[in-house]
Image (cartoon, rainbow, N blue to C red):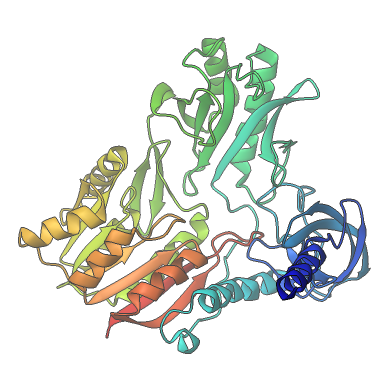
Amino acid sequence: MKKQRHFHRHSNHRSQTNTPVAAVGDHAPLTIRKLGVNGQGIGYFKHKVCFVPGALPGEVVVATITKVHPRYLEGKIHRLRQTSKYRVEPRDSYAGVAGGFELEDLAYDQQLKFKREVVLSALGKYKPHAYKKFDVRPTIASPKQYGYRNKAQFQVRLVDGHVAAGLYKANSHDLVDMRECAVQMPATMKVVRTVVKLIEELQIPVYNEETQSGIIKTLVVREAKESGQCQLTFVTNTPKLIHKHQLLDAIASQLPEVISVMQNVNPGDTPLIWGDQMIHLAGNQYLTESLMGLDFQLSARSFLQLNPYQTETLYEEASKALSLNNNDVLIDAYAGVGTIGLSLASRVKEVYGMETIPEAVSDANANAKLNGITNAHYEVGSAEDLLPQWQAAGRQFNALVVDPPRTGLDRQLIATIMKVKPEKFAYVSCDMATLARDLTQLTRQYRVEYIQPVDMMPQTPRCEAVVKLTRR
């Protein structure tokens, strides 16, 4: 009997916890307590978390429930009952609809405070050693809050019978046709809109996700800040590009700022933007950008920070964290095309960098030669493989800068760093959660002197940070 009574109590408890507190379409009154890491407002409805994009801390809203999950709800603003004093009018009509504009209705000084809070929140979740004592500094503001993005990567589809280019709505493949975009540098949008018009006029088939047919999938446009020149890449479903010559002739006559036209072939249904095959269609194969007094040749797939007005600030912060002098030997891990290492090469004795993408390594070495830099050398391979090899070969180094992708540092690389123990160490991060996770391991050997958030992407919840680490 005891077992039976216990069973009934347990099943009643489960039925209560599994009973939905709301259904899709219900209206839920909420007071927004804070912003989540993706910029959504967070409130509580009957003790269950509800995420509401576009809602700001302190606001009282009535939200329409859009999704019900076992542990949380999603909603959208139905009515604002009480408005935050920090709410501003967004310049883009896409704010709250497509990704990339999540904070555009929040005053900029509050965006900066939020980004520092994202760092603190991640530290509180992962709790690296002595994290409560970390010096997390105020976020460095971007000199431009609009018109700063040097790259547009827009999907191309048919919408209502017309060629459209833009970004998807949140958590969907519904395309938002972006005719203007306030955060993009102006030439990127001019190129996109002109090319969309040409694709429609020439009746070049665009990609259809359902049938996996058509040709043009994505337009990628990168603009160089110093020159205003652009590189245009067509990402296509097939190597065949019909009406190619008419298209290239029209681009040459209507878009003189486009000095490089490439085609990347990425067939079929894939979440990846880029395929393996690259075809040179017209003009140069590279776009040249200037940073820190140096010129960098960028191939179509090269990584470069999206905000060129703030990139030099980021690299200077990395230099400060390293406290470099001309006797230092610097390792540039996750080097890309060498922008960080080459920018710092004049301040050190030698730079050795590595990158797993052969084209990026080729670009890095070419950029060293382009700028007459003879003390920087880049090799193909992962840092976790090359660092022990270089050490075994007698190559000595005392400084390390890492700038990994959002996934953070490779586990084996962390083990290698802990073994090698470089004296000077700066971690440049674009994801605060993986940064905090990695610091739980690194703080066994290193002390965090400070974390400096840097706003590289105004109007979004994205943040960069530079961490100064010193050996214990």
